[in-house]
Amino acid sequence: MPHYTPPLRDMKFVLHELIQVVDHLKTLPRHADIDAPTIDAVIEEGGKFAAEVLAPLNQSGDEQGCVLDKSTHEVTAPAGFKEAYAKFVEGGWPALSADAQFGGQALPIVLNQCLYEMLNSANQAWTMYPGLSHGAYECLHAHGTDQQKAIYLPKLTSGQWTGTMCLTEAHCGTDLGMLRTKAEPQIDGSYKLSGQKIFISAGEHDLAENIVHLVLARLPDAPQGSKGISLFVVPKYLPKADGSVGARNPIFCTGLEHKMGIHGNATAQLNLDGATGWLVGEPNKGLPAMFVMMNAARLGVGNQSLGLTEVAYQNAVVYAKDRIQMRSLSGPKAPDKPADPIIVHPDVRKMLLTARAYAEGGRALSIHIATLIDTYLATDDADVRKDAEDEVALLTPIVKAFLTDNAWLATSHCMQVYGGHGYIREWGMEQFVRDARINMIYEGTNTVQSLDLLGRKVLGDNGAKLKKFGKKIQTFIEDEGVVEAMQEFVNPLADLGDKVTKLTTELGMKAFGNADEVGAAAVDYLRVIGHLAFAYFWARMAKIALLKQDSGDPFYAAKLATARFYFAKLLPETAALIRSARAGLAPLMAMDEALF
Ligand SMILES: Cc1cc2nc3c(=O)[nH]c(=O)nc-3n(C[C@H](O)[C@H](O)[C@H](O)COP(=O)(O)OP(=O)(O)OC[C@H]3O[C@@H](n4cnc5c(N)ncnc54)[C@H](O)[C@@H]3O)c2cc1C
Image (tube, rainbow, N blue to C red):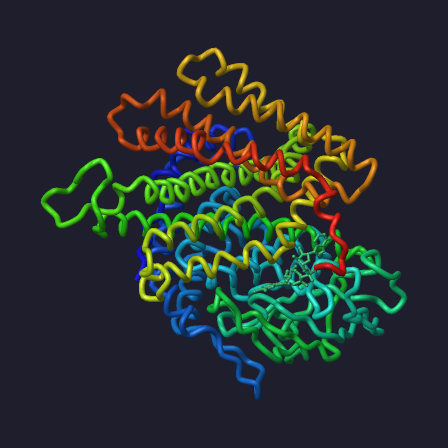
């Protein structure tokens, strides 16, 4: 069975040395009392829960999967999931960064980020149950009426109830404008919803006493397309006035998907048969309201992949030190053994270092974004809020797509390190690969993320958000460019920054001529910007490691070696990506459709 050790040392490095999270949070009145020991205690306890309670259930959960009883429409999660969830609730974890008004602990989001990375490493399928609840909480917190907040938020905060997001229907996933689920207004102000949703994660289960579905549907007079979609809260059991659960609402699970990975999470087909729901936000403004949940979920999906990258790396390293095969090309490294451990072979090291650089770069970027979210939620300064919101908006599609693409590569490399033993079930590596694959698809496919980045976030505002982020990078380059030891990091970062500026201008011009040019370049472009962000954070981490390399702590030597690996072996990918992005639309459209 795979093992998992929470990466507390690296998390503390990012939190305290890279981001200087305490100084930062203390500028926000809401978090003025936070201190490093509190932060460390929370992540240490969270890590224990992940490693001791969740990780042991990961492989068995994958093997057992979820079971639907078609006669009752009830779903049973794999053995141990329900008990683990009860412990999670008992520990107060769902309340960690929730609003105190609704029973939350009001701790910074950045702690939730660290907690969820570890939960995902330990057991992505299980973690989706509370993960989706957090998104539902945020959506109702932002758009619910006072009454809706009073009914649902305390229950979601305590974890007594869980949440879902119900968007997808058989004929529409990306193009939600085509959705057909109907909502008929009732005299008492509620609505009756009818239709079918598919692929609903955590859509039915036995972990909690109630499930709060957030459902997109159409009102009778709704305009066509995405401008005619409204958002409804549709609980599995109708809440009574005293907060307890009442009658069963007719939103029933009619089937569970058989799928490649995340077997422990129920992917439900849901039938709404006149189910009672209540409008959340304004009529026909459901998509923007749901975007609160979708944005949270997009960052959450990036975090799933960060967790998988880390756990796959940890296991592959242990295996590579233990497994002996062949001799090093330059002569035996373990002459006392019949062969050398495979970690002596350069390509095995390349695979391990790729996973490590993606995990540590992804952690730095994700913790940075979580700190920005804390900033915009708590600052009194409108300019600071706007800047933080803009940066999160720009970086969200990168976290979703770049981190999930990286995890697919990284988990696959880590499986490769095991050779054939990675492909068979016993070692647990193939599960990481299978679980990682969905992250590139749901919450808007990675193609859709790239269109969001290039089309909306960059070209849509004439590059304003990108320029602001670029300015931060430029300031770092100017400050550090004069330091001899930093040249190896600053020069490639500066070079990539210049190339991104040129590429963005060129793509903007092409898009004026033909909007399809955006679609032709967007996926390559997102990966280039992902590397720009990673190079910036890796250069900043290298700076700290250089300053501390004589401290005697091997952590900094490892950080520096990984930074050098990233710049030498991974960043050069951008040259090919830029060439491909510039090649544009013509090679994609030249072939007649009939010839495919
Ligand atoms: C395990 C699992 C869990 C899920 N959980 C949930 C959930 O909890 N709630 C929920 O509502 N949904 C959920 N989904 C649905 C998921 O979000 C959708 O599958 C996803 O958004 C893609 O939609 P689709 O499958 O209909 O693919 P389609 O929209 O049909 O897309 C097919 C392909 O076409 C591409 N494409 C589409 N439009 C464009 C375009 N304009 N430009 C370029 N390429 C395009 C896509 O990128 C994709 O490669 C889940 C799915 C799975 C498999």
